[in-house]
Amino acid sequence: MEKPYIEIETEHFFIRSVAEADKSDYMGLRRQASEISAAYDIVPGFLDFEWEQELNSEADLYLSVFDRDNNAFVASASIQAYRKEEAELGIDVVKERRSNGVGTKVLNAVLKKAHDMFPGRTFVTRINRKNAASRGLTEKCGGTFLRYDDSQFSKAVHVGLSDDEIKEDVRKLYEEGKDAVVIYRMP
Image 1 (tube, rainbow, N blue to C red):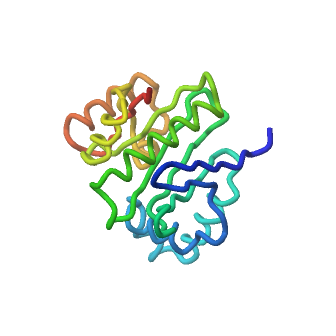
Image 2 (image 1 turned 90 degrees about the vertical axis):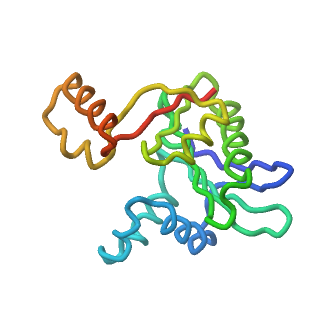
Image 3 (image 1 turned 120 degrees about the vertical axis):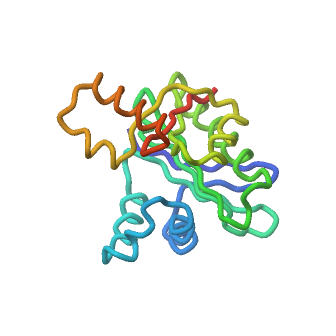
């Protein structure tokens, strides 16, 4: 299966597959939103490495979002593991445009397109338990709690544990307010 190119036009936004010309805006947003943004300053070349990985990924679809009125870059979105039965949706909005409906409109548009392109798949979002704004956005778009999961850091710590041990440990981490994420199933 060839990697699909995506274009979505809404009343307010133009959403399309990420392109080389998007690097500055796209990775600038990644610096604002990513929990690992410190790595861009600490690890030489990491920002360029991550950009190349996303630009050329065969497993994931990364999208740039532009305001239709002024063509300004306002968000990024993704459909990760789109070939798998359970694909993950992601969205980041530039700081200046948060809390004014951009996330809701973009997530709904991407979700609709994902269902149209990949019928029968389950779509989820993966949100850090401490990110109340993203949890609220997901719930506003119809997301419902599916399960707790461990973060990338926790996954490294849990190497060698059974699935049951990991699930119990992740539940405890979540309840203690530590390193865990919430997985929502999208409608």
